[in-house]
Image (cartoon, rainbow, N blue to C red; front, side, top):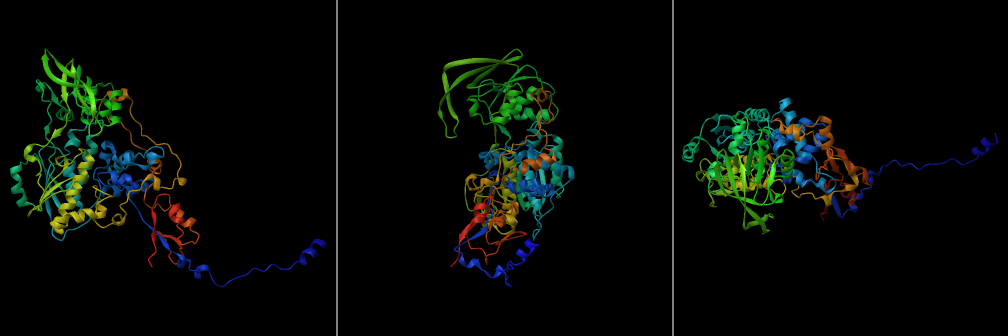
Length: 578
């Protein structure tokens, strides 16, 4: 009772109230600089020849929005399941995550999405209808030709593809072993392209002298016939050697069941690895003969490692001088070489090591030195107002523009570079016929991903990606306070013993939860993933959520906290206009 009496004598606590809100406090009048949403270019996307929006693809995959991720890929690349198996992973070499722990498994995620697209039947439909119907002829059903037809199909063109072989795919079908790319996967991806109404005419060999007639019958022509001439050894007895790509094609056609004895493979690139690894599976004992050192080999390191694991031997610093038949064997005479400085490409120059020679007795001999264009298909070299060389293509003006592309014009011979060439050709032809020859360079410039040369179909069509800043985000521009180390997830892979036993695919594919987990390792460099840091840290509550993030400039005082706290560098500051 005493306590109650004492408390009751305390004065009442009065709280001040206002009938107004802080909305009237326009702190935006203090501002000298203003933040703005400034989505930039991720280094992986800039490094991808096909110009895929990789940061967005990973973000969508991490959220489980698999169909949206697939459609994002298919806007830029018709072969996700194929590239997910055979791509040279330019993107992973540029991944900012590599400076933190390990690069994101971008190729593995793409394979997962590509396989899901095939299983679910997901595809793209034409995205544009030209004012005037257009029809193109495509020479060659390899990755470049099929890509050119695909992207022209997306732009509303009709296309007819002329292919000398009885099946489509070119190098993908005949030059890549089945343990890397199965026939079924390729066939289903080609079938998806044909759903755009594209027609392939098989068994139709086109010669250079046929182009004049074809240009009269079509609105445009794309030539992507590939490199058909193998580089020769130019040594006595080289006719005893089998050409590597031709050998791989014979295997894919089922014409080779077994190879016995020791086999020498001359070369150090990825084709040499494919030939040697195929020979292992056929029962031979292959030896790669290379004139430089292992560290100078143009083949990718993981291909070299797997070849050695499977039992392939490597002879370094030896160059073939001549080959002689000795009964059932071939005697290969080798000149020993020594390093002699460094070349402009960073690889060792080599020179003969005096008269030091050795002999190698083998049962069979293969060459894998690369290929070149047949002289009659070499693109024109001169530059003029009516002839443009644009990195991945060479285009000649005329009533029916003529484009040379694919391996004929690419510095790097890969499936992804071929896709890039086909896309560039399609965009150039569409611009030429719709807007005029003089608009090609400007139009392709608007479609560039970062500094180029990769192009984006989404940007060409004026989608949201067209507004993205071309600045490539560096690791130093990320706020690493918001990321933690996460172990890279690898798919299952066959043991060397299992790999040697046959031509089944050696890599497994992610499960859904693995694909999502690996995709969430992506920093999503340069793009907003709606993490809300800008909204949470804003002292003026001047960032509004909704469709994207909107900055309320009446209240933003330009402190820049949102820019600093953005993990992905998707915001920037600019000086306030006076």
